[in-house]
Length: 113
Image (cartoon, rainbow, N blue to C red; front, side, top):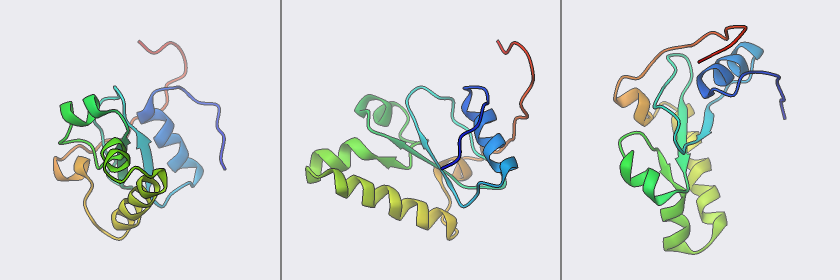
């Protein structure tokens, strides 16, 4: 497990993890985060919120709520997420890559508005 003192914005946090050497695919819990992707690492986006899944279906890779609701077993959702990560690091395009989101944001010291 890696812990870092960094900003709370997802883009900067993920860029920091990559700079630290944590690679192999990233899972991001999506709620109200802006859609983004990284040109050097797949970003698998997961939500357990049915409203988010509905509103952002083009940006979400795994709808964990749907998996749990249909199967009724949390382990099934975990396996679904795990399978999606393996597929992404094996070359499957994640939603952000399909739609062309690709940038890296470098951490800025000081106030971020």
